[in-house]
Image 1 (cartoon, helix red, strand yellow):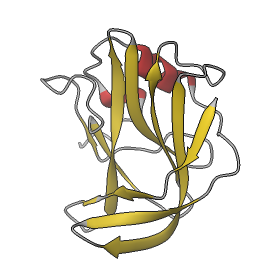
Image 2: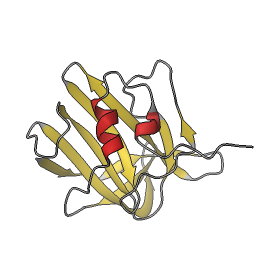
Image 3: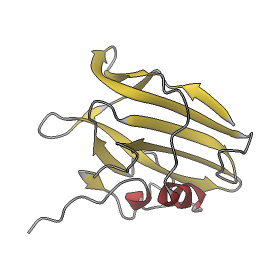
Image 4: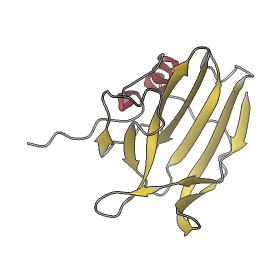
Amino acid sequence: MRIYHLERVYISRSRTGLPCVGVGGGSKTNTFEGVFVLRQGQLPQAIFLRQSGPLACSTSQAIVPLKKGDIIVEVTGHLPVDPDNPDVYWNVGIWNGEIKEENGEYAVLEEVPELPQIPEEVRKGLSSYHNRSGSYFCVPPASKK
């Protein structure tokens, strides 16, 4: 298992100005990639979720607002998706609430001592061939009535 310190992640802004990050991923042939956020060990609720379309295996299938203390994980490697697989690279950081601006905004991340528990739905999403749904990487947004 290879764990690296993720120092920063580029953010976008919601319509109301909240800092957000794109999450998603999937597998292609024998490799995979993905990004997800953990908030107190759980997947947070998204404000936007792509259910289909041309962005198969995109790392922006859903948009999640960030909160201080969120753990952001970027992962790439060869299948299978397994923390014990030496061909998997885990880039992990925890957001300290700081945002910097340098050719776009990014969230400054601090080091996480160990790899957090990976939710089973994230493993399924990362293992899905040409995944088109961001629902594996977040809680779907609340429906508007």
